[in-house]
Image 1 (cartoon, helix red, strand yellow):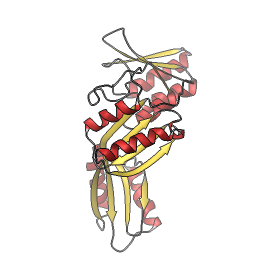
Image 2 (cartoon, one colour; image 1 turned 120 degrees about the vertical axis):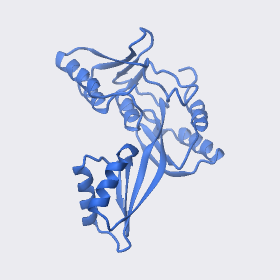
Image 3 (cartoon, one colour; image 1 turned 90 degrees about the horizontal axis):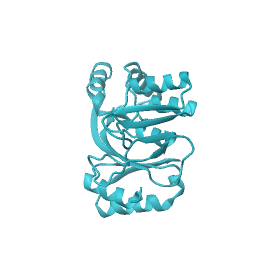
Image 4 (tube, helix red, strand yellow; image 1 turned 90 degrees about the vertical axis):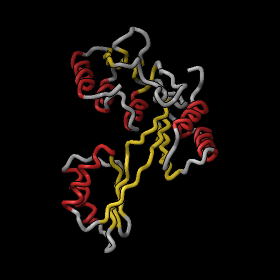
Length: 246
């Protein structure tokens, strides 16, 4: 289910009309615990909180549009994701149902790290110039960092041509290096407080020789950056972390 402007418009109208529900119809019957095309045991969720849904969207899943979720959370009105083709199923996105468990696992391989090397070194002022030029081209980066002789930032692969054109024209003195990576997001409210989830995850990744580059945590998400991970390994992780009875 790929969200867009129509999702946001519908939820905005819901708020303006003070309706208690907004139905978003697409070709799938709700929000799933993983991509059903990748994970054989993916399960449709009956309910999910706005915060968890936001994390799923931010992680790169093609579900409800980010802005749509933000508006729904602000006004506290339910969003129901359903299929156009059947009355069965559906997922309710709502407030106040957070439980400390994994709700969804998202694999995002549509990202790339751009490294700008300069043997003469780089400064904070140069970094500001680079970042401002990216923003002027409506290129949003997830993070931007500087070390002694380079800048690094993460973009969507879909924006690579635009980024390369910008860097070639504005910053020809830099050597540009591109690195593919995969972001694995494990989502569920309060999971940062449950060390068992992270322990199980790291044990499985080690068992299947997945090289972990970076781990970061929020209240509702464990984000793991890896060089590569197979769909089969994601499937095994789903079986280990997500309750079968869901």
